[in-house]
Image 1: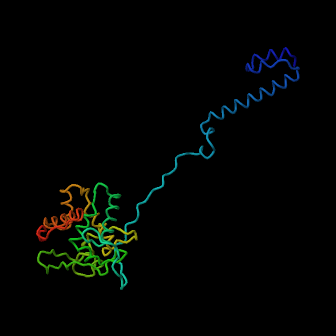
Image 2: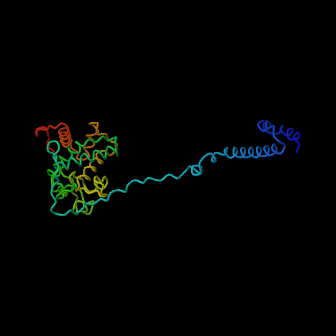
Amino acid sequence: MRRGSVLAFTGLLPAGIATVTGAADGSLTDKLTATVQQQKLSVAAGQELSRPEAALPAAVAQPLHREAKQVLPPPPPIVKTVAQPDGRVPAALPAGPLGIPGISVDAYKNAERILAADNPVCGMPWQMLAGIGRVESTHSFGGKVDANGNNLDPVYGPVLDGSLAGNNVIHDTDNGVLDGISGYDRAVGSMQFLPETWTRYAADGNGDGIADPQNIFDATLTAGKYLCAGGLNMRDAGQQTRAILRYNNSMAYVANVMAWETAYASGTAPQPAQLPRI
């Protein structure tokens, strides 16, 4: 290839290649050949990089759409009363406001925390749950509860067979599983739930997978869940009244619960004359 023919060929090459001069014909030819090869490689690389997936690492270039993992809610708790051994003693915890047993305070505050996370609209204060507990069972008869929150002796209400004036007649709904009797129902646990209502709203307050009405942590959380149902807001006195009436359709009952709620928040106990008879 003569020098003149090589230079004539430069019109078809990039300008940078055409400036190569001052070398022997053989040397220039080699350089031109190597430069053209490099240009081809560069063009090929540019074409490769123009593909979107080529600009990403191999792992990233894979399809980015993955099937979302379904997060399943925890299974509902098992509804039952757990048999407890004899010889248990009351939990040794410092008393709370106005002498509330310490284990009861723990249960009320535990329910408040769980409800605040699960149902923030409700705004349930622990003192309201304490008011319910005070009226229903005097906090499990003054704290007769072991360190795990289980009543030392099962707490039951009167049998609802019509023998007591003012009580409804409620026939058996649980085959005696929760209230221990057949034929009729009776309220169970520290927060005094009828078996049918307990089964519907049962909650696991201590995380053991069981909703036991004779456990104060379970009973208190279930009471809060029941009171909050239907989107009620306990920050509003009218809605709080509606919630408490679910427990007992009596304004005297509402007055007692709210009086104790206020007392536990303020530290001042209500006078007996201030509490209407239920």
